[in-house]
Amino acid sequence: MSAPAERTGVIHDIGYRRYAGARMSSAGIAGSLLASGVLAVFGFGRSGKAKILPFVLLGMTMVPAVVMVGIMSFIGLDAGLLNYASYNAGSSFLVVLFVAAQAPVLFSRDLRSGVISLYLARPLGASAFALIRWASLVLAILAFVLTPLLVLFIGGLSAGASFTEELPRVAWALAGAVVLALLVATVAALVSSWTLRRGLAIAGTIMVLLVGLGVTVALKETLFFEGMDTAAHWVSLLSPFALVDAVTAVLGGTDAQITSAPESVATGWLLVSTALALMAVGLLLLIRRYRSKGA
Amino acid sequence: MNLTIMRLALRAIVGGWRGVILLALPVLLIGLAALLRAVTGEPVSATMVIVEVGLAMVVPLVALLAANGVLGPEIDDGSVVYLLSTPVSRYVVAASKFAVAAGSAALLSIGGLLGASLAGGLSDRWSVVAVVTGGGGAVLYCALFTALAAATRHGMIAGLIYVLVIEQLLGRFLGGFRFVSVRAVAERLGESAADVDLAVADMGLTYAVIASAVLLLVGVAAAGWRLTRFQLRGDE
Image (cartoon, rainbow over all chains, first blue to last red; front, side, top):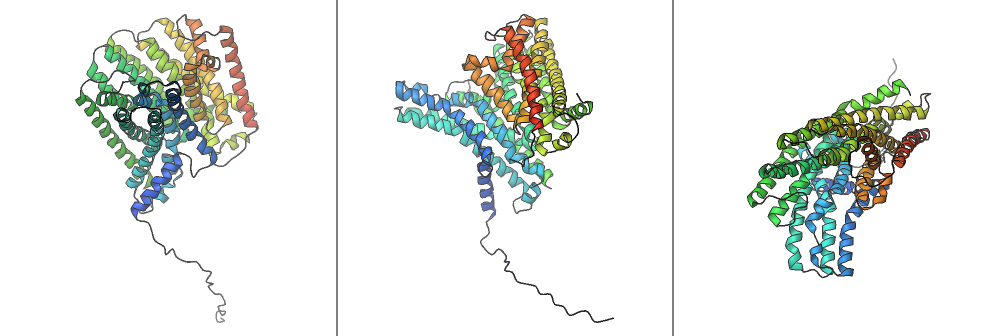
């Protein structure tokens, strides 16, 4: 048996290096995940086609605002035309369409393809990941809902409306929009993280939000007609849009657009807090979903 | 028509979450009618339940889910090539899938509307509306949505935009859109069959009949034509 041939192989140093730069903290990771989530909803970081739908929908919600401001400045009608609160109710189905179409981008794709386990292998845990995804959907919906309101407000001011008169009215509408975004995002996140298929998630969100709104309106009108007002107010919890409409009407004194609003302020606060409690339950379910899928 | 394709399509519709959502819609409608009747103790308002929730939302959504269920997921994940590589005419593929989607959507729509009008204590004429407008509308919607699902990967969104923007938003302000509205055509058919007032804008019955026939033929043919030119593409 001959001696082993003399080793001739060499390990070449071809210059690979370890990453020695600054590493982001958990907060940094969370921040960039949040930002990329918000941008992905509007199609940034995705193909050009993915940008069409969100921006077309955004354009469509702006049309009434632009028209109203135009009428104000050219025909010179008074500021009573600026009805911010009705905007939330009036553009409800565009919001639903936007959320239904874009929520699967954040919640279905990585869960379905299994990429989620790569995300969760990073220092950020499942709960944080789920909450950040939810927060980016909330921010995106806020951008979608607030833009026309701000156009209306600023346009109205430049057309001669009084700042001090308009401010409380627009503030209530903005507060309503924030609650709306929180609730709608929770519903859409839950539906799309459970159904996983894009088409199905869209249908599920539409069913819960839009058919839910139709059912709520029918129920509320009938209950009011029968004189069961308390029951009618609580039915608002079935639909975020009906809830926000009723609550901003009673607390902020705006005109109720969907059905009549409760009269006691206490009921209004009770409704909001119940809705937010339900939202917290929804978030717990969302976190559980990510825990079980990502493990 | 190809029985194997139809069997597979049926399984795609009823399986999993899609079946749950599909079934939930008509059940929700019946439950709403029953609840409203229990609260008031009188027959429910047909406009509120049958028209505003049933015909405006449940029927198009059921049709959209069914039509996208038979074609959408396969095109989405690319497994449609295995189906298209079989020596079956693409038009037969499209027609078989459409038949299953239309059949199940019509069944669920009729069931939901009929159940709601019975549970709500409405007159028999509304049962006729349930069958004619609900069933006919579901079949017509399916023809349109099958074509859309074959034409684009975003068939679901395209269908929703059609229903929400063209039919409901623009249709409310611009009366001319009634001529391209499946719902208006289906309601016109139901109105003349059941002798009820569905508040459809004036549209000749002849137009409604011809438009439905054209939509059926063109929808299925377009889906088949689109499948003959099918190209595999990556995600987005």
